[in-house]
Length: 453
Image (tube, rainbow, N blue to C red; front, side, top):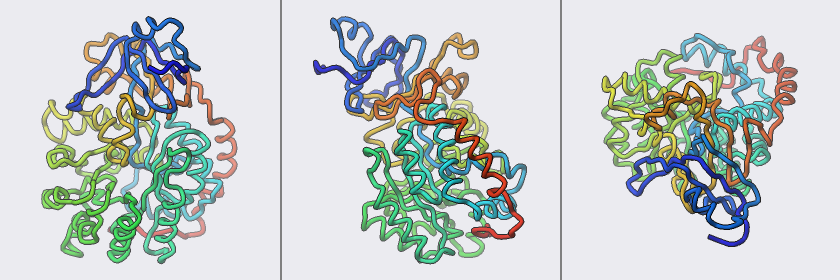
């Protein structure tokens, strides 16, 4: 242990750690030493106490709390929190065509900025330390991320209806912002979906991704209707469309995948890139989609499945904690097997698998020496989390996002004892309220795109 003061010392907590087989275990009465944005060591509180005058610039006494790797939201549209609750109780086509895409044609950079601020505040409050965002005006989102201290994987979304400049803007954004904000921002190319981006544009995206060493983040096989429509119109599934375009040779993050069918599995299994899927189950329930992400089948072929919320316009929340519980419950129901998905498996999806999904499997997703210090402290002393017979079950099925006391990214405390330190929520809400009438006006009859699958 270095003799210069540590940047941060967290003591007295239990810590979720992974062993060399990636099994989850819990170390009791532990201490976490953070230096230069990294976890230097996970040791016992007694060991630190034995070092006379152990020096740390900042200390957190975390007795009664659980330290977890920060949660990762593997697919969202952060600025869409401005549309929370605007398009309710609608089928997917009407949701897009009658409300969301008309309203999004009004979006200004200021709307995006305020939406991103509110989203980052919501995520930091809920123990999310990294999010993968797929949206417009992403320069603005990147500026908010840089300022508030969260980690993000950002892609400027595009449709083929924008012409070649949409694709070019996505590439230009990805190259300009890659590894910015002291390395907290990573980037991806972000074609919207196979039903809004042509095969030629998908193939060009794959070529650009390989040429520039960039990953790709796309919606695909979102639901069974999309797969059935693709089969009837083109004779191939959306996953086969991605394969034909060369996108399975890139590092690819597929959003949703509830429409992935058996014939897609061998195609995904032989992908030469790192393919991952993000699941956001609350939205699937709201849209009454018949299927959910086939996690068991994907895991059997080695494809990581990360947890996500999608945008708050469809999900009403950016609460990954809820996604973790819902994923476990819906998988049990879908598979007809109470042994799948267990609380420990759900925690694995929330940590290491989510880190892999966003291309950060080597740097975040676990609390271990050399990993980035993205850590959340969860208070387990409340009546709804006591007594604790099984820590994993308590975390997944009893604890909730409001139990997160402290959120740390890169060793920097962004929320301490429920107080946000880098964002002013009341000011954001006041400004956003003034802009809402212009944002939600649909009298113009325009929409940025057509949902036709």
